[in-house]
View 1 (cartoon, rainbow over the protein chains, first blue to last red):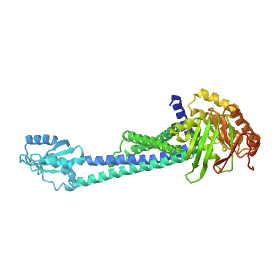
View 2 (view 1 turned 90 degrees about the vertical axis):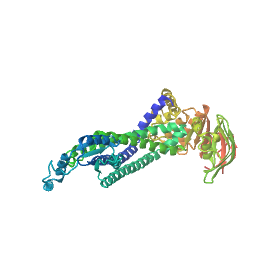
View 3 (view 1 turned 90 degrees about the horizontal axis):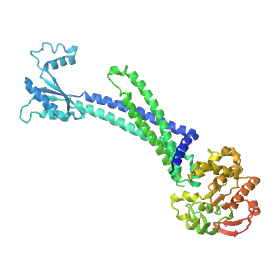
Length: 305
Length: 228
């Protein structure tokens, strides 16, 4: 293909967008509407995902040491736990700190309950809190920690707890939420593709005659296809551009507003910067793909004349 | 040169459009195709520009075996055949100039030459002043002139015209016929299907009459032979 022909195809594609004004409008609006809905769900899914991550990351393992474990042994055990691959962080909680924490978590109602306990008669053991890299591996990590010292028969820990049962349920819920989000987004994506390609198909149906004439004067299939290809891409870019602008503007407003309202509930939205890039890339990619796919597929049908 | 050898054409619905047609049309001939509606005239023409392929038999146009043509070669054969229809078939959103230039863009002619040649044929069909108009702003005769200009812009060796005067009043029809004769005079073979008795009987040319898919008459300077 000559370079001048390529330019001609671009010019022609651009002209077609303008010439078929109403058809372009129909295609672009169906892209905007579908992708906008998709984008809203995508943002929602990203935030739910982040929320799930936040909740999961709060899951910790609590390792209680045997009473009166000497300080040297404690250091040794801390290192041993820290050496486990899944473990991210080990924090030592002395029994004094433990009592303090307990007081705090029981609150005002329980002050009586813990009355009389102080440094000298603290019944609590020393302990570690352990954070893991992937909360989903917490049960496995807990098992490994429990196994420390079992080789030489010394049982250094009185118990290793991670909220067995509760944690599993929590993960079931967060995973379900994630999967549902994924299914909705994928489903919407597919629906959008069909809706949009159908609209584009209709616009090309109206131009069947045009394609017939092109063939008659001896245009090769590629020659006919190119302007449609470019037109489809332009419609896709136009549609996703409008969608991205609307989504980002809406989301920035939401993030700003949420800092006061949702912020009190300790919920942090995904930042505009993080969400914007992903959503823009997906929307633009999908928009162009759909535009091109819709137009070339429909042209192909009429090329077999 | 167009040569049909024992051409049969049966459509998918079982219609036998042509039954054993053999004919030779020499370079630079002017041929009228006459006969009742549905006799097979349109099929005859569609075979020439490879819109249809024969069920049986061989057809060659300018030395190309049309029936055996590979799909990707079709466009290149069509560039040497100009086609004109009763309903003009112009692109409604393109100007007169663009409609004609389009046929040259397709063969990737340089822009400068496209412009020169397009204005040249517009001059020939007498529409130089209308190059910026849209088809809908023109009369039927003018639209047919644009279609003719588009058909000849690439200097095809053959022009196939399917009832080119079918939608036009007598006076306009004569204008179109003069134009076709002029094009024929310049060296282009013309095959024209028509129902216009007056034209066939006045502007005497070779007449091929088709009935029920077979050639019933082929005369060098024939007459229409049917009641109009």
